[in-house]
Length: 189
Image 1 (cartoon, rainbow, N blue to C red):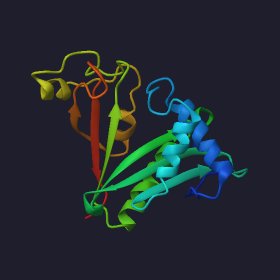
Image 2: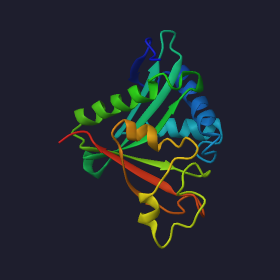
Image 3: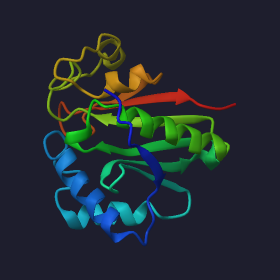
């Protein structure tokens, strides 16, 4: 079911109501699978503040009553030719309604307008959601990655449906057996 009341716009540093909603969303949205990312409102507010810096994109999806349904950010890398998608979060009440997909597509357009060619994403697996987590990937890291399977709903498959490809992995990025899976997509020329 698509969300028909969706509007995507810049997160404005003067919009304290939206900023507070995004902060709460970051804390609750990452609590189950990446609890150290934004463990409290203060850390979430710091992330949001950083999203207003030069070389950043900060976009929100809101509905007709200005409820924030999701947030996506982009960070300029490699002189603007590559951008990191960081972060993406959708309110649980609005998940599986096309909002995450719409936010990613919007970010892709924003990056293309700025001359970007590639978007990359780091998708941590800290709680054994894939077959590359909870194991020692060395010495055959790429063999393990080639056989990756999604066993608990890891978001890498969401990104694959949007055209992103797994391009690498950093074993033990978040501790032993907790890798970071890297994905990328060409969005411009």
